[in-house]
Image 1 (cartoon, chains in turn blue, yellow):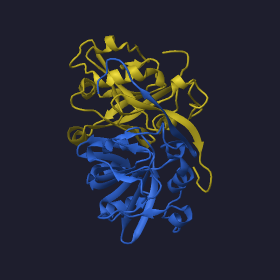
Image 2 (image 1 turned 30 degrees about the horizontal axis):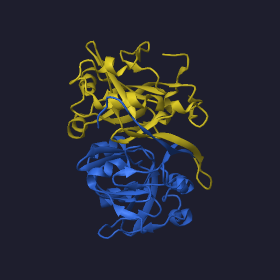
Image 3 (image 1 turned 180 degrees about the vertical axis):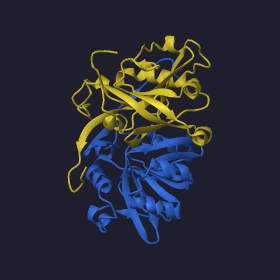
Length: 195
Length: 195
C-alpha cells in the first residue's frame, strides 16, 4: 500500500468497473495466497454494490474463494500488462512458484484476511453471495463489495482521470493472445440525455 | 445494414465483448421495437458463446425480452456517443417517440425477428437462457449468442483493429454523468505468458 491509496465511497464503487477493465482476482485460504487475471468481471448493482466474475473450475483462485468466501477484484494498469498476462496464463496448480516468479507484490489492508496487489489503480474487497447453481453451471460468482479503494493519482472525487494521469496508470482491456487495449480518451455526451 | 457488415464465427464472438464496451440492447415484441444502453454486459462462456446483461425492471426493453426471449447486444462507436447516452437515459415507458426522437436507425437481418442498430461495430443476436431467480433477484439475464456480425473496417479475422481504423469506430466505455472513454492504444504482453 502506498500513500496514494484512498478509500472510495461504496456508492461510487461501481464506477471502478463500469468501463469494463480486465481485472486481477486475489484470494487467500489456509496460508495460501493466489492471484489470477479475469476479463469477465462486471458491475451488477449500485447499492449495496455487487459484481459478477467468471472463475473457471481449473483456477486455484476459485478454490480459495470457495473456501474463504472472500476475494479482491483489482484494476491493473498499463504498466502491469506483462504481469497481468502472466497471472492470467500460469496456474498455481501447475506452477507452485507462480506468484514468486511473476514478481507480483502483495499488501494487506487492516481488517481483511485478503491479499491486495500492489501497483493497481483500484481494489474492491468482496464477499461471495452464494449462488451454487450459477457457480456450478456457469462458473459465475456474485460478490458484494464491502470496501473499495483507489489510487488518487487516477481516480479521485468519484471519477477516473485517465486523461490527465500518467499513461502507465490506464486500465487494461484484454482481447486474446496477449493483446490488450489501454483505455483511451474521454468523451462527454451532449444532447437530451440526463444522468 | 451496410457493405462492411460480415458474419463473425461463433467461437470468436466473445472477443466482441471481451474488452468491456458499453453496449446497446435491442429487442422486439408484438410490433414494438426498443433499444437501450447498458454498461453492464459481459462475456460468460466461449462455446457455445454466452453473455450476461443487467436489465433494470424499469426498462421497456426488458419487458420485450421477457416476452420474446430474444435480444441483440451491439457495440456502439465513439461516433454514436450522444445516441448511446440518449438511448440510456430516456425510457420508452416515458417517451413514446423515444426511437424516432433519438434518430436511431434500425435494420433487419434475414431470419431474425429482431431490430439491429445501424452504425454499430458489432452485433450479437442472443436467445435468453431462462434463469428466473437471477432475473428476479439481480436483474441478471443470461443469453446464448446464436449469431454474430462485425464491421470489417474495425473487426476482421477475429481481431479488433481499433488502432488502424477511423477513431470514430472506437468502442465506448461508460463511467457516469454522460462521461465515456473511448478505447485506446493496443498493448501486446511479452514474457512467460502463453495464450
